[in-house]
Structure formats: structure tokens, C-alpha cells
Length: 150
Figure 1 (cartoon, rainbow, N blue to C red):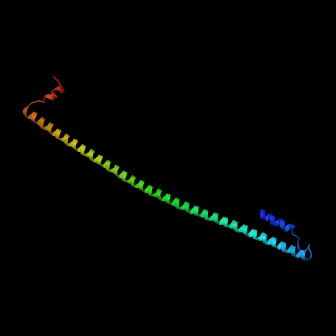
Figure 2 (cartoon, rainbow, N blue to C red; figure 1 turned 90 degrees about the horizontal axis):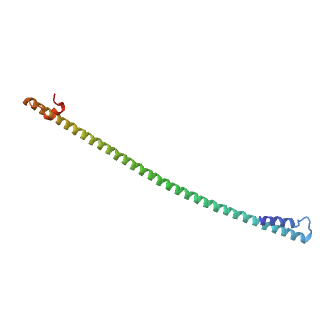
């Protein structure tokens, strides 16, 4: 901005070709052309430097954007891998729990079957003993306590 205002001041102070005569006229025109040339060069340099700065910033922003994308994709891949691992472990654990439930059910059924078998054995034993008492005419002593004496 300082240079552009300097160029404007130089153009204001330099005499134009119409106001002067002779060699002064030629020198003034040459000085004016030289000042305009200098101002044009300064303006071109300024625009070139601004474009360089803009391109440099754009390049860095692009690099940061691509870096962010790569890192985000890496993190998302890790998250997906971890979620798959968690789902696999969850499925394995659920399978283990189902197997434990099945084992418990099997053990329960075995115990129930053993109790039913024992109940059948006890029943047969009682029936055999009752048949023996009937055949011999004896009465069971343990049972007499239940009925008491009449």
C-alpha cells in the first residue's frame, strides 16, 4: 500500500507533456514513463508475491487436509477392527453361555432321572417289604408309631 500511494504521488507531481515545452518536456515525459514503469513493476512484483503466498497456503492446507483424511481413515479402520473383535468375542461368550446353560439343563435332567430312579427303587423296596409282611403276617414297627395304640 505504501508503494502504490507513492506511485500515485509521483504521478500527481510529475508534469504532463501538455504543460511543458522543449527538452524539459522530454525529460518530464521520460521521468513520468520511468515512474509508471517502476510502479508497474512494483505492482507486478506485489501481485506475484501475493499469488506465491496464496499458492503456498493452499498447498499447506491441501497437505493438512490429506493428512487429516489419512489419519481419520486409519482411526476409523482401527475402530472397525476393534468393533469386529468385540463382536466376535461377544458371539464367542454368548456361545459359551449357551453351552453352560445346556450343560446345566443336562445335569438337571440327569439329577431328576437319578431321583426318579431312586424313587422307583424305593417304591419297589417298600412294595417288596409290604408283600413280605403280608406273607409272613408281621406288621412294620416303624409304622405303628404313626397310628398309635387304639
